[in-house]
Length: 112
View (cartoon, rainbow, N blue to C red):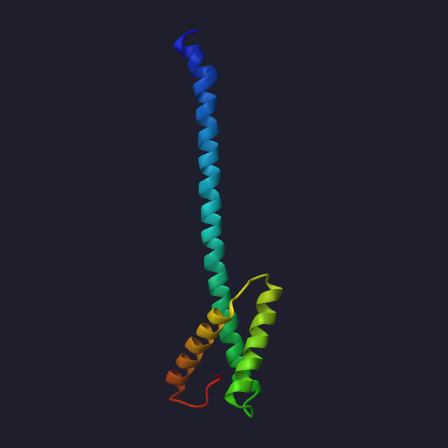
């Protein structure tokens, strides 16, 4: 067998298969990173929306009741989108949004 035959018979197909596998792996990793980024942005937007809604709709409720209403809304909205959020992550995002609101409003009653 000549070098050219060996190259065209074995090396080139093997190289093509390796490059295809590499491209598939890189594509999958990019898709996963993008999906995590989109999920994080969606979580932040949903938490912000729910906290604002609770503050507007349930002004007469106390902090613990508002917190439970916000959590219920967040869980429901994210479940509809197929996005999982842990209890800790939800509480941290809520605290962050409430702190922003309180700084912007100069205080006031918080959700938590």
